[in-house]
Image (cartoon, rainbow, N blue to C red; front, side, top):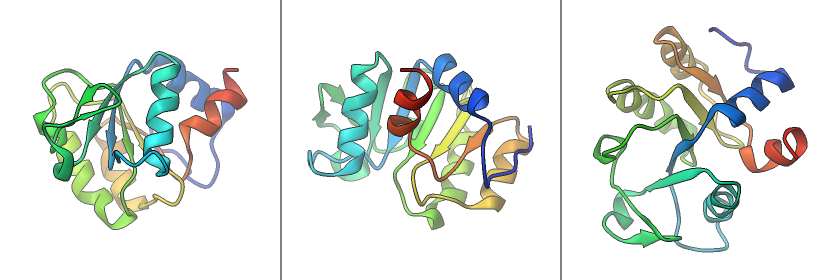
Length: 144
């Protein structure tokens, strides 16, 4: 589904949040003051199964979850890839995501994370893409 990325329908965002169970959080930080740490804590509190991905922290635990170096290292199926990396990394992240089996259904770029060409490549492969949004903001607004 090719989406316009300047705005998203609230029902689409709510559906993604309802249908997602497993999330790979790229750029997960052990620092509790970092947004990725706060968002991971929030998502865990809402019942999501969150797998942190950070090559510098691989093999350690973050909020009780094993940290993996790459998406490809995660041994379980992932519904959503949530990206806390600079936008210039999004094309490589999309390539890594598209190589996963099974392929995640959703790609979510956090606030400030947007690359329309990378999004198009993911969408052409059947991935639903949301960019420049935060699930920890959208969840309370749309789900409660």
